[in-house]
Image (cartoon, rainbow over all chains, first blue to last red; front, side, top):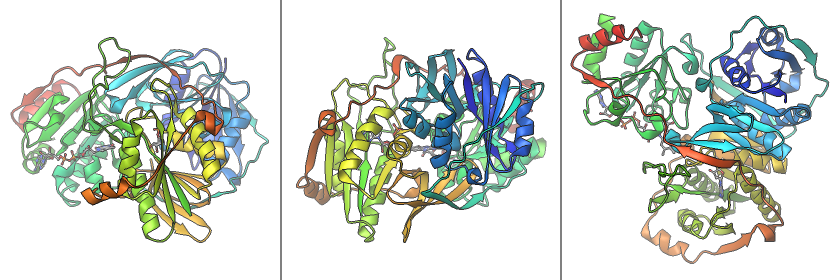
Length: 309
Length: 250
Ligand SMILES: Cc1cc2nc3c(=O)[nH]c(=O)nc-3n(C[C@H](O)[C@H](O)[C@H](O)COP(=O)(O)OP(=O)(O)OC[C@H]3O[C@@H](n4cnc5c(N)ncnc54)[C@H](O)[C@@H]3O)c2cc1C
Ligand SMILES: Nc1ncnc2c1ncn2[C@@H]1O[C@H](COP(=O)(O)O)[C@@H](O)[C@H]1O
């Protein structure tokens, strides 16, 4: 048995999720290699070399990989797959884009959003927006998994001594071209790995109203999240959505402001350690998962909270 | 251009699912079923492209037992021109790979310029079929799409990605999967339902398509998630702060 983890890197920076995927890989028997794909990823390779538990860092560094398109990345994964019993990536938007395509090319199934490894062939994963947990077993010769970042502890990014292996293949994407990107730049902690998350819902009322969420987050050095309704209404950008179809978070502290607590939202945050809800509706379902619930008008309670912190 | 829209019959998104007491699966007896919300968005996008003159035919397809014809009717009522039912046994345990293999065979027969799928089915939460189909066909893929525009050389899509938004240009034929913000599906009116009854639903199956679809990973057990310990109501901001300090989270 041998595991290949497909790393995620952006402009030379390894994504924190990769450390969690390595945590999951550590629960499988056998050695583990890491594949770093991109262009000008020297810095990412340096960070990858010292990751514990990684035997070899496979590097595909070429201009054709700069845009990380599923079309050629999937072919690259298939080209390096022989010899591996497990292929793992984060259940991030790029892992979800890439891994099913690679699995299909390998003629095998994929197991999505793994939250527990029971054996090398048996895994647990949430279904129905997390309202049920399925235990599944795969007979495929190579198991292709995406891993839920919040379900596995990150490995320490130090102490390892991996060998770096440059890959020869250069595979082009012929039918897909990157036109542009509109990436959110933020000084705040990253949503999926933050210790504290403050989320706002439709109850914030407007883009201006949502400022209150940012102000509280600043006080707590927290990441900012949102419900789908808040994103749809244009209060914030799509990358802040928490839930079944957005990001999954599990911070030490999750504060939900003006969020009703629809099952699709709960799917993305109910594994948080401590949940606080402030909502003016005493019957809001968010209170069912809140450790501390405050029935109040958030426009009064939140300024008071900021003041008192 | 012809657009193929694969749709899935799933539990209605408002229904709270319950796990069967023998932990064999979730209980789907007598629950409300519906077209998967993401597939509904895909149908809407396809119909709008035809209305805008960018496409000339919209074909809805669903893989499953007899009951999926209900959701095909919904797609026809929304404006799809015709439908194809790929019949599978009531107890067939197809996973996303098997579904994608059947759809790939159908695409080879129908030769659409575009295949529009939902990004995810809300029952299995797999998020796989579109990407698998694109891989099997060797087509470019645009996943989690919240905007699309047919241009001279193909199609431009705006994708919702973890870091924000990304725009890709894809050559046709291509596979696209929809995210929630692509559109708001239209409301179906009674006359639409009447009209949909006259539209044809063709019937096919794995054998006719020449495919022996792969089984999915084996489902061994289904359990309810760990319940959260009950919380408390606090009376004031002051009490909230005190509790959070006691819990050492701030
Ligand atoms: C297929 C599908 C996928 C979905 N995926 C997601 C997802 O990933 N994430 C997600 O979040 N949603 C998702 N949704 C949407 C979800 O069903 C809900 O519609 C959404 O979460 C509601 O957002 P909200 O709680 O902000 O808004 P609402 O439900 O409108 O709730 C607003 C809340 O604010 C409170 N409020 C209003 N004013 C105040 C005030 N002044 N002070 C205090 N409280 C106030 C109200 O009492 C209310 O409880 C999905 C839906 C579907 C169908
Ligand atoms: N049985 C099916 N029949 C037709 N299309 C399907 C079926 N299952 C999944 N799909 C399509 O694939 C998308 C993604 O599903 P999934 O990969 O299961 O999350 C759905 O939104 C549908 O468009």
